Length: 302
Image 1 (cartoon, rainbow, N blue to C red):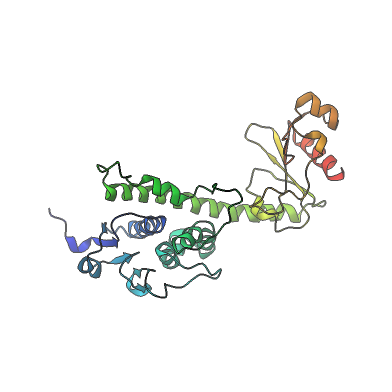
Image 2 (cartoon, rainbow, N blue to C red; image 1 turned 90 degrees about the vertical axis):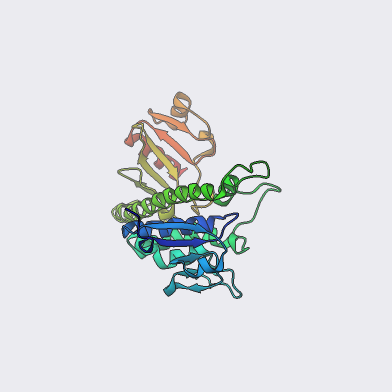
């Protein structure tokens, strides 16, 4: 039986080279329509007639109208900016409308907006969001990866529309993981906060599992070291960072511990099951919870 073409929604974006924003916008719209059990097709074109008849049009067409599912940002004046001042790309515009629906909550959607969406929106609009510290060396971004997927001058046999859809599948997997990470982060935040509230000496917190804690603890003034169980049954002690995006700690472990292992570290610390101290002084490992607590106590008072 021939498929009723009117039952297939048309997702329209531009043809030719692609960027992270149109790839991720396609991924978001795919999730929305898949959730509705709605069939759809992705069409990459600049044909005005095809664009006019699209059900969802993004990164092309010169119109931003959320109610009509038109999500371009290339027109004069752009399509607005978020609270940080970063202008929306097609990804940001689509996420603004559908992010909470995909994530199940606005809180999770806002987290992903800051972590993934805005860092794609900014560069797509010519906005620098980081400063290089080393000449001719830059962070390798998701856009760099998607750029690497595009055919070079020497690869004329590659079908760019097929490569684009391969990129969309990668973006969908990234979004799935980011939603899981954000949801679990907020649950961990509640648990770590409860441990913090129930700990007398708040300089040292002991967790019952390896929750993500960097983005949580920097908001709390007192914690210096965090103790947690590791998958190999040992116990780790991590220095709390001043900022989760930097490597500067509130306090390093003692300099004499740097790079020491086993017997050498045990002699220096007096802790019989001390295993290792990272030479950068942000991580120490012990065989037992008790050993980890003792090492943290020594480090706090050093």
